[in-house]
Image (tube, rainbow, N blue to C red; front, side, top):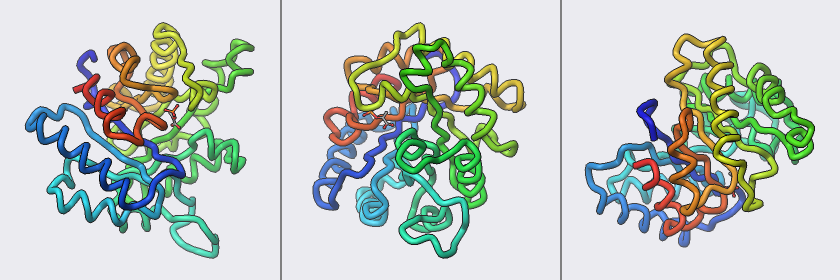
Length: 257
Ligand code: PEP
């Protein structure tokens, strides 16, 4: 990976995981980290289901890895509290031990009809709570086939990324919707083009655009991580399926470390 922002390898566990097996995976990750002692040249993040944040926080603390394995929420509400049954507010994530919150994941945009404006409000809520917002953007298959990819990314960046975003409080995740969970990935050239475009759009709005981490997400695995992570403007990965098992996740981390 060319020199740039410190890479971030983030695992999105989605609606998967129960406490005991989850802790076994974290312990396995810890063993890998131990072996690589002193050489962790990337930030490592797990975004488990909300029910696992507290037990994983305790388990990670017990392993003495609080600074080496960070936790994040998979979503947050735009309000800090209130009558929103089933939702989780950003200050609650922070209180539970999270440093990050994913917002605007395509599964939220699709399953819950979240618009760019809704994602923007969630990112602001994450920032207000002191969390780093990982703002997801990406085109659908139909949009790609229609040659609309860069236009969609421009629109989503404009609509979803708050004016107060900085390289310190915001990460952008480029996740082509059609590549998520499908085993399909864009070509390296297409990923490079999308990431260069995202950097350029950020540069038009933010003085510290060069410092923003831009993650690639969509069927990242051990076998393709090195090629993807070596691309210019790719500052890490947001990983779904391959983040559930340490044996699959660690090789991806090694691709940047
Ligand atoms: C994701 O859901 O953010 C994701 C990238 O999933 P997967 O790695 O399984 O494609």
